[in-house]
Image 1: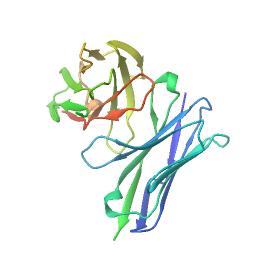
Image 2: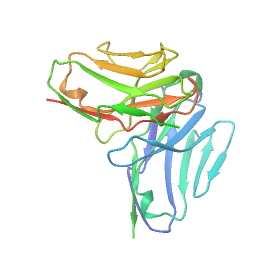
Image 3: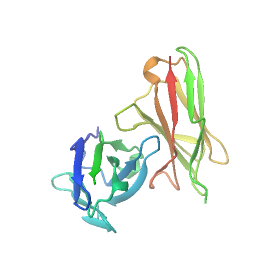
Length: 112
Length: 112
């Protein structure tokens, strides 16, 4: 079955700098890759997603890139702000299989 | 538009008891998925309901069961609770079984 690995487990960056979180997946049939942000005591919030027919997607300060050949995808956050501090999860699924398989999460800390 | 809501927010049970958790899907969504999130880990898929039928199941024992009602709200039932069932239980709704999932705030269950 699908396995998703996420790195790093903790990332500390200076406010205003960029942050990059990377995930790899094992099942080449996976074709949907969402990223969620989870704040303490809350449910995951979708921040961006990408499907396998697209190599990159951007939404303001957030971008996701996908390399299907290498089976990895990355989240890029530019001009980080204190409110970006949270745990970020990547996930992968085969859309016909409905199950999201999640990475272990990255705790992002924005230093003032 | 109302988002995904879950009740109760917190629950304490003892080993061997039974529990029912509830989820109201976002308006216009006919699909509900349930996930278990242990502390410090990514969510694990339990099962999904699409138009009142179970549409897939993860690696959870039969004592985890569910229902979806005609208004697309859903229940998760867990029988014979074990200490390891202590977790955050997340409900996600989507407009179809192959669409983006939007999460509720979760129910935190503690089994003593």
